[in-house]
Amino acid sequence: MWGGLVGILVVAWAAALWRFDVRERRLPAWLTLPAAAGALPWISLAGCAWAGLYLALGVARGGIGGGDIKLALSLGIAVAHVTGWPGVLAAVFLANVATLVAQAARWHWAGAGDPAPAHGPGMLAAAGSVLAWGMWGPHGI
Image 1 (cartoon, rainbow, N blue to C red):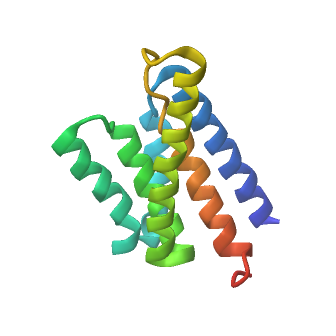
Image 2: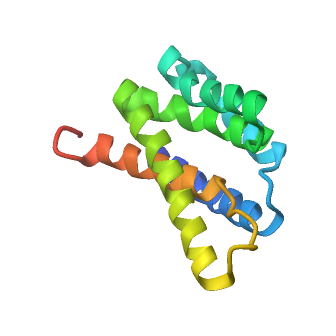
């Protein structure tokens, strides 16, 4: 029973983040910080890698916001808990591929001057895909 309720809450949280990022072009702290805090009991080096990478890139090059970094922490911890390092690396890769595909689609339909797409939806889709594969894939539950 609790697993189903938690699943519904996680899906509702991800949908709210997705919609907020697409509409407002930012991920609000009131959605990202509680998730990061809730993930802390399962913290690991692999789990922090995604957020650490985004923090380093944000400092060095810009273009990555604090919301993306906070979201990467909770998603990274969850993915690492289920799949370890390979899953975290796959999620980071897939998130960036998803955003690049969204960018190419926007340029195709709206022109090259259109702003870059939100990155949060790509992060959520990638983490969800890797978690699903880790939990129910060939070697999962």
